[in-house]
Length: 92
Image (tube, rainbow, N blue to C red; front, top):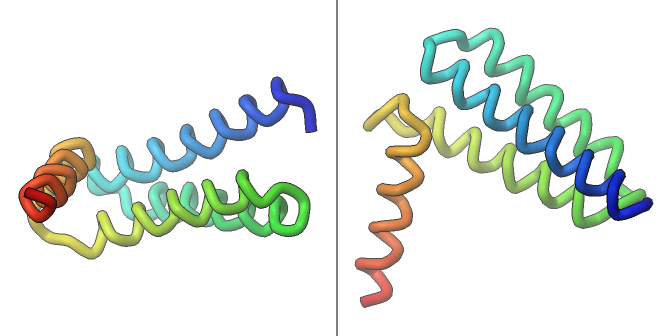
């Protein structure tokens, strides 16, 4: 896979993830589920073909599920910053 194609695929993965969390923020669970299903489909397509892209899909899907399981906020960016702060406090 060429570096340009890899960057394009990474951008598609990030876009799907961002669309999924944005849909959750709007309360559109169906759209979020569709986008996460696309992430899963991409992971399946990359499995055995490109392990880095496969694991990128898996990690984003894991973040998506962790985000929808929590009930503190529907703002993904605020939630992610909160996680980072928790990690920093734990490391200190």
